[in-house]
Length: 314
Ligand code: SER
Image (cartoon, rainbow, N blue to C red; front, side, top):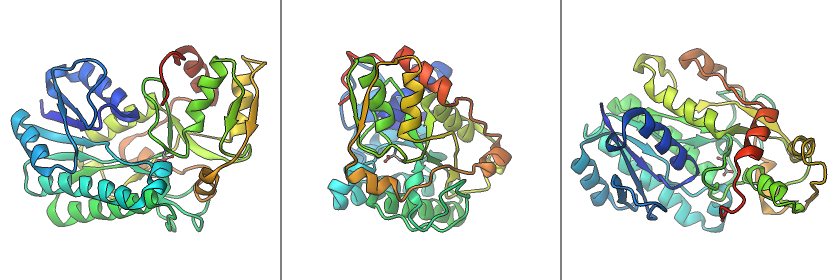
């Protein structure tokens, strides 16, 4: 068993990926790391600022890590507040890990890209794998540049780096980290607390989304498939569910009829307006057999059953 390091293990994706990989391969084989300490003591956790190249190397050496999932990043909304730092963090972390693979210290990398690589000139419906990409956020620019570097390292140095363009991810175990799609998580907390939800996007803003269980399964399927199946080394489009705030609100309201919403768009509306409404993921389906399971109704039902409102969303 190749030992795996998850960087960003306390985040929205990291929390669930860690649990799933640990139950599959055993705690001792999946090392967690994050800039913040975990809530529960964890024998296999290392505190790590991913910009600290030396510490990253020493952890890799200590546990003889062969695979890295790099999940630390500043997301779209947070990145707009600090563009320079976002660029530095999102790019440097990727180079630190790519270079370890180039030097053959590690064998395999997972690095997430995002629908944020697309921009206002991209076709919005069923956005193709290959299309115009002129991202207008610092987050999107960093993800697009990252994709180019992943492909470059794969072609030039035979680095086995694999990537997915995640849509907005919806989950209940850990809060999202400052994205434009976060409303689709927040809305459930308001619904369950019987509070009116103030949505920061307008009611008719369609965005591609995915339930976390599907996203974690996609990530592991991509990482476990034979190397020969990976024909795209930049990043794979991944489709899940597409909906507008009005549609998810209606879906929640069908079981919580008193739930109320108001729409007060803020700067995140401008970001959402440049992103696709839905994604064509034919390449992922054909190359490594991807198929999403959750639709809006099932996802909503599962969220309403599992969100714990006493958990702090911040
Ligand atoms: N969920 C992310 C964001 O909104 C998209 O990658 O920033």
